[in-house]
Image 1: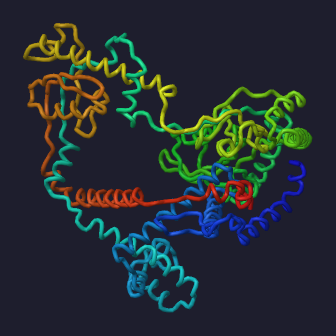
Image 2: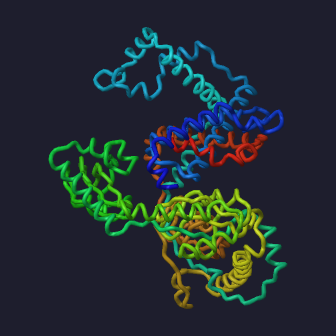
Length: 611
């Protein structure tokens, strides 16, 4: 089957593309009973039809391919894309409802005025509307006045019909945002006041506690602190049989020969960009002529063998073939600015070839024919013995998380496992490391954390609570024995460890005071030389003495106050809008019907990703 598909890939592409378009046009989901059979999403009563959803998915998939190349999307990637489309449709509906509720409208005159005087960024960057590399609004206005291209005008109108209501809503929500000088000064002081302190800490985790903790105590703690025990995702337990598809020495030799041929072509003067578009298997950079962009020589953004080669190259120089786990790279530096370099590369993968490829795919075909998509749970054991392949141990698949075997990701498993009946086997799933058929052995539903799942974590928290009580008792006792005077000297005389900390600001305390607002507040509230009592913190108890203070410079604050006000106002406005929309969404009644509509169509839906 795999060999047949590879030989007829062109025709299969056209068949799948036509099948998807026909499915989209006919609307199979209309066969679902009920008057709302074609509704995929309902937001406060506003309905989205399945055809609109599919059209949006198709547009999003096309944009994804333009950005990431033409390689087929995995089911996880497809599911993520569909979730993003649903989120956007939900957001669109909520915005329309808010516009209507608040009476926000857009007139033709507003669109014309904004189009003439506030063009979108794509227009201001277009060279045809620039003079001396600067946007020239007169050229843009002349274009609007003279163009007869209705499609362009309709596109411009659509942009502003979408954006103007958003601007009006933002203005409505943020019109009362005001930042006083007093607040700006407090913020500046938090950023620039600094302190130096001595601190004696009593850490609860250092205090032994051997008391017995029963189930009733653990359960009571979990009920009192639900946020510390988040809902658990569903977990599937699977086994698999796989046909390995890792390259052998012959495959590596073919890749070496191919990369040598490509390098020789470049050495003879071929344009790197053209060769990269034709030869590179990195579809993302390949479409851009191999361009990765600017990276730092000292960075670790890319795998180390690649970075070692980058550090050794000069601008314009072509590397020798660089082997990594992805294949062989030919690397060129276009420009260098200090530690930063602009990099291009061509990736030649080490792929299965010839007889080895035929052997592996023949075995994969046999695995598919004998074991894939079967309801009999014993079939996988039988096929493993018949083919001489090992049956894997049990693996956990966590819903919503990628599944990996060793260093290799295996796509689609984390979706298939939660759609299938127990005991059923999967289709053949293709990964970089092999062809897999999985069996779903058992399923643990998600939901509220249970004691049997959370016992170690709950025990740790309850134990810590007991240790905190003991720590506070010890801290009170130490505070009494220290008396008054210098904390460092008094603690040293009693063999206690005191830390000298600082200088630090309220917003950037040392790690010692990380997540300890009470301790930081005390450090800045004490007069120089003054000592605190016991400060009860989040992770420990502290006795603190101020050793010094430096106050923020008010003249420096005044010099930057206007910039600070603008920055803070923008941040406050963004936070206001985000908080408002989160509240609107939380109150909304949202019904996502995808599972009902597409449960039996999961494979058909993926046809679009194969175009």
